[in-house]
Length: 192
Image (tube, rainbow, N blue to C red; front, side, top):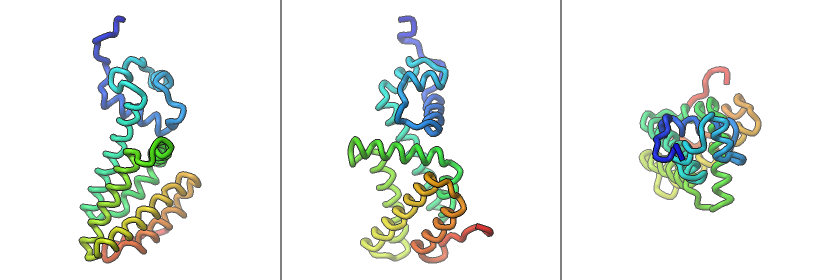
């Protein structure tokens, strides 16, 4: 084989970004190395070289999507910005759809999938810490974090299913206002 040992011209990070963009628009259910390679105008060799298998590629996609979510969550919580995560959902519905598709696929394979564990555990822990910093006892902070996250996830799914940005945005603000105490409560933008 002429390609053996030759490094592909595309970097792994660039290729991963292209794969994520493609999957966000087309889904993962029918994606194969062949279909991805054809859609991205690359050889399957490049996918094998960087990722080994479809499972390893999806693991890399999950890790990158989760890293971005974690970075956004930490930044927003550190700055007291509770609005940007919802705006990200509105602006990136295809990525949000990909997140849900990965979560559902993981759930079929194992109730203890890596994305579900990282996303829910990490967001849950960030909010528990936030609520405890505001003075709530451990158990109450855990319940409040669970209610907050559960409501937001439901609204994210509603946004994907219906595309109704205005209604789900109003509901998001109402939900967060009910769950988050003190001056950090977000206010909906005028006209929403």
